[in-house]
Amino acid sequence: MGVEIRVDGLTKSFGRQVIWEDVTLTLPAGEISVLLGPSGTGKSVFLKTLVGLLKPDRGHCWIGDRDMPHLREHDLYETRKLFGVLFQDGALFGSMNLFDNIAFPLREHTKKSESAVKKIVMEKMEMVGLLGAERKLPGEISGGMRKRAGLARALVLDPEIILCDEPDSGLDPVRTAYLNQLIVDLNAETHATVLIVTHDINTARTVPDNIGLLFRRELVMFGPREMLLSSDEPVVRQFLNARKVGPIGMSEEKDVSELEAEARMGHDPGVLPPIPPQLMTGDGRLRTTQRAPGEWLRANGIVPPPGSFVDEAGRNWLEEWPRYVAERTPVGGGR
Ligand SMILES: Nc1ncnc2c1ncn2[C@@H]1O[C@H](COP(=O)(O)OP(=O)(O)O)[C@@H](O)[C@H]1O
Ligand SMILES: [Mg+2]
Image 1 (cartoon, rainbow, N blue to C red):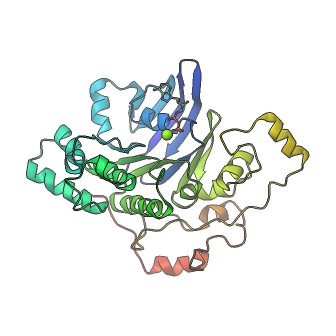
Image 2: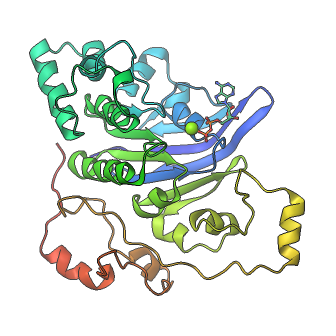
């Protein structure tokens, strides 16, 4: 059931440009985590470092007893098979149709027969809603379909770890909601450890079990969703609540004079908006790693703002939860 990833003191620079420094976090096994941060903060570089495509200057990335940056070529190759990665642009081969793109890792890494390959490819294509598009070329389909094809390809080796780089960028809100739902359902189904990189605040607020925020070359905070959504750390509060007032400008970072001007105007950091309920599986099953709504807040003596955990249909998940759980059993076992 998924594997834990322990990142310790990871630092990456290109030449004299430090991208991020001393990043330490643990992605808990089987949980969904989001890494949030403005464009250019090194989120994609972080994912590529996790899978060993980029070498950090220093630090560790432990998967069990294997430290990705320090593995020999052969062990790295083997350990990479634990990962399914959806790259930011889908990274499909332009001259290959969707079927061949999705079949690629199977043909490359396994000795499965063509009929076995076909069975797996069709199963994953059905899972992401692409049946019927097998013969299409990447250039002939929409951005949303390309993302889903990239996801299907990331899944064919039944990965223990799924990394998605901006699955939501360039998609309209309906497609984004669909893809987020797909990822939550996949996690329920496979128990894989999931990391989603995004700069979409709404995805970060509603999808994951844990949130991390990269800003100005450091990991500002990483922890349970409810911890970050109730945090009064200025950068976290501003970023997760999409406020204009705070250390982050509309494009990247604000300059000092802007910040000083705001401080003079005495802007109130404002009241915390309601904490939304977490996105549930499509068929209402409980994920094995699912926490009860408000659990972290209660354990830490924090009263959520009024209106928290109420969904669009007006259901209050704090009240509904005991009944909801009683009617269900968690998705059991591994695979
Ligand atoms: N291979 C590379 N060589 C040099 N600089 C790079 C390389 N890859 C990324 N960068 C730089 O690292 C920074 C972070 O990039 P990236 O991880 O793509 O940001 P994000 O995904 O958060 O938008 C950018 O300034 C980018 O130019
Ligand atoms: Mg990126």
